[in-house]
Image (tube, rainbow, N blue to C red; front, side, top):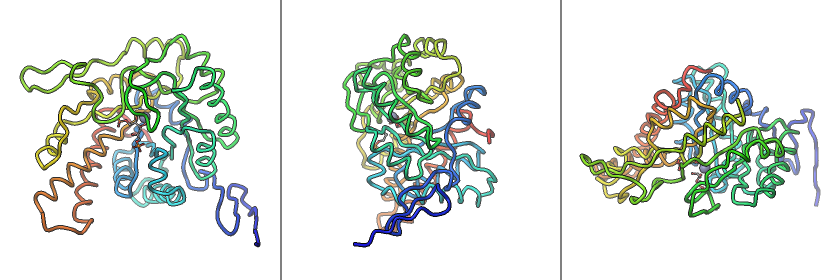
Amino acid sequence: MLTLHAEIENTNILLKNNRIIMTSYKELGLVNTREMFAKAVAGGYAIPAFNFNTLEQMQAIVQAAVETKSPVIMQVSKGARNYANGTILRYMAQGAVEYAKELGCEAPQIVLHLDHGDSFELCKDCIDNGFSSVMIDGSSLPYEENIALTKKVVEYAHQHDVTVEAELGVLAGVEDEVASEVSHYTKPEEVIDFSTRSGCDSLAISIGTSHGAYKFTPEQCTRDPKTGKLVPPPLAFDILHQIEEKLPGFPIVLHGSSSVPQDEVDTINAHGGKLPDAVGIPEEQLREASKSAVCKINIDSDSRLAMTAAIRKHFDENPGHFDPRQYLKPARENMKKMYMHKIVDVLGSDNKL
Ligand code: G3H
Ligand code: 13P
Ligand code: ZN
C-alpha cells in the first residue's frame, strides 16, 4: 500500500495519504486564551465559554459574539466531538472565524477549546487538529496523579502554543464521564503548589457550582414562599477570595454555571416537557464572580434549555411542520438571545474586542 507522507511547505499543516493529519489552530484563525484571560482578569469581566454540538449553536454563538463585540470560547466535550466528528469540527471552527469576519468583525477572537479532556491522548489529538486550548480534567485523580497528567499535557500543548486548563476540586454531579456524588471544594492551600508544578494556564475550581439542569436537590435549597420556586444555596465566595489571594492575577474558571432560566423551564413544561424543580446558579452570583479572578464561565445547559424550549413550543403551535429549518430557526434565535444576555448582562465581556 502506498503511503504518502508529505510535510508541505507550511509546517503548521501535515499531510498523510493526502489527508490533513495535523493543523495548527493558527492556520484556522483561532487564538489561544492567554491574552484574552489576562485582559479579562485585569478588566473585571469573564469570557463566555459556550459548549456546542450543532451548526445552529455555533451560528448563534458567533452571531452573539459579533453583535456584542465579545471574545468567545467555543468548547466541545469528548462526547460533542464524537457526535460532530473531529474533522468537521476543525472546519466548523475555521468557518466560525470566517463567518464572524463576514458579519463585520475585523479581528474576531475565537478559541476552540476541549472541555473535560480525560486523557493525554485526547488532548494531543485535539491539539494536533486545530484546538487552541484544552482542558485536562484530572480532578477525580489523586492529587499527585492530577499534577503529573496535567504537566504532561502542558508540556505537549506549550510546544504548540496551546493553552491548558486544569481542575482542582470536584464538582457535584456528572462531569462528562467523570462522576462524583459529592462536591469537594477546592482547597486554597493546594492551589499554589498545583499550578506551579503542573504549569497550567488556568484553573477550574469547585466552589458550589455543578453540571446540568439539576444543580441542587430540593433539600439543599429553600423555597421562595411567594413563587414556590427553589432558591439555591450561595456559592462559596470565601474560598474563591482565598484562592485569589494565593494566586494573584491567575485565571480562574467556573464550570457548571448555567442559571437554568425559569421561563425556559416553564415553556418546556408547558409544551409537554417534564423538568420539575430544575435549578441553576443565580445570575447575580455569576456577575459577582466575573468581577474577580474568574475569567472563564462555562455554560452548556442554558443553551440546551433555550433550544429545547423553542422547539417544543414550535411543534406544539405548528404540529404540521417537519422541515428542520422551520423549528431550528426559532431555536437558533432563542439561543442567540440567551448568549447575548449572558455576555452583556452577566459576564460583562461585551465591547472587549
Ligand atoms: O460539562 C459537561 C458539558 O456540559 C458537556 O456535556 O458531555 O453531554 O457534551 P456532554
Ligand atoms: P452547565 O451544565 O451548568 O451548563 O455547565 C457546563 C460546563 O461546565 C461545561 O464544562
Ligand atoms: Zn464542566
